[in-house]
Image 1 (cartoon, rainbow, N blue to C red):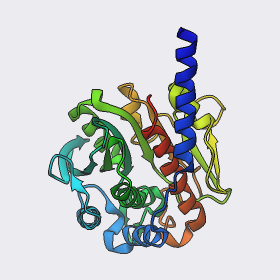
Image 2: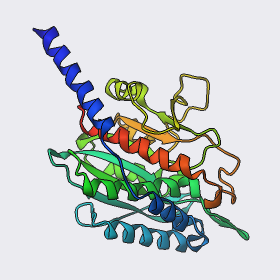
Image 3: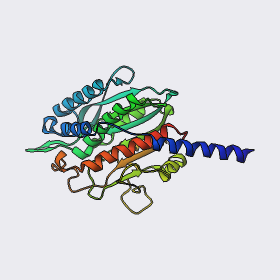
Image 4: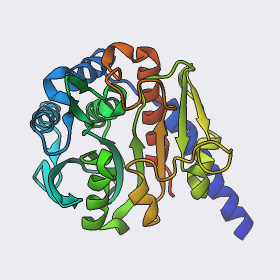
Length: 299
């Protein structure tokens, strides 16, 4: 009987996997690009934590979520926090919104990206188009999609601050949220630029259910989804490299999506005009499809 029950559970898992991957993951692709262009423009002065450009960018992010009829988490959009680095105090703000689940409203999938970048140095603006305006603009596409296709589990869309200063926004969130209610974190950091047309997913090796999902994933796009950079292949290990790190540290399953470093990484040349648009649109489609599979599965 135990073997029959186990086999039936496996069958249900792969049926849900197939159904989720066949579901259309449509969003406004032109708006995705337009939002990335705006968020990485000179107007926001590189979005450095604690500076005017960061404040303006945050206001833009909140305005976008409101325009998509997505409410702030527990009724508010901004979650301020502060920290010190070498006796300098930084005031920062996470932007958090929530979409309630239809079946499991008390269990959360956290989808994250960081809205801060490196600011201005001399006469050079570090616009951070790929790093990580690309992830934040993708959050808006998730919001657009999920308001039309309500998820089974509740979803928190998190635009974290101060990633560039030590993953501070993600750390603050993990320390101040009931982590027992979080099923998984999907983190997006640098998903819009790849000459090789390759998106990496990191984290499946740490959770059997996530590994099954990624191993059996049917990619709906022509861009490649690769596993690696996870401590198993001799490449740079990204397990703790971005805002998924604090989730992993407290044993919350995670998947991190990102492309490999390029010549513009942390340079003023990381601008909208240098992204690879088709790859970017495909990246968001892939991540949405993975999300749908997770939302219909049991981790």
